[in-house]
Length: 336
Image (cartoon, rainbow, N blue to C red):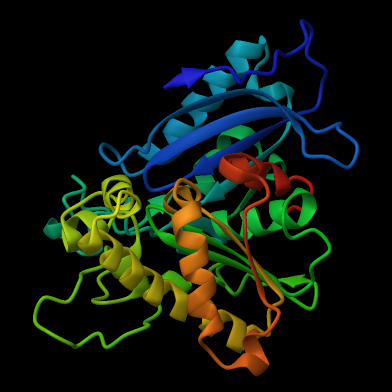
């Protein structure tokens, strides 16, 4: 799906536009923006998006990014060479090959957990940074985990402004986390700090039909509550489940409450480990159903040790549904 943002770009584009690339397990989106907006977020000029490439050659994802970049540039009458920088916020985890990021994401790489995932490929890792750097110039491409990038965007322009001890948590196709402690954004040796979606909040050996995560884990958080897991676990996509719960379906509401128990444990573990003050929540599952989910998550967090949880704020992402676009652009404000 392609189309310009509602804002109309000027007839003649200024030099130095920024490109933001948001890579998720469901879609890839590319936006172009004018960064000159004072203290506010960059002005989005155009955006193109389509489902994430999961078949073909191993670098199909990188080739898709380049093609979407070209399509966005064409809409504004420019070329890739006119861009001052390209921020790439990608779902992870990451590994590094010759110092360059490769993506090992369970919702993209079908070879991690095998045939049960039905992704149509046997990939175990996908090259990303190297082909983009070769095509665009290594100095112009900045790659980071999407939740870490979203954390930076929320700290710059969203609900985490002024917060030194905070997190961004996405509840979407997968579960992702970006972390900041004492004003320092945490990244880790491969940029994977915050992959709490692959941690455990229950007994992974309980029962014979434990949920299988795309990473190969059985019973981790992502396998239990992520949007990609709900059809396999509960027989319904997230929108249908949440709509039924909103409509008063007692069984659906009980299932949603059980999901929030698990997410609540994850949120508490983050607070207890890092002494956080505020958590910004985003992702399609949460943002589309926040009126239902936010009170349940707040109630779950409040159940735990008050010395650690008292005063901790759970808030919706200040950048809302555009947090993914601004996340990628934030990497050009604070490259890393």
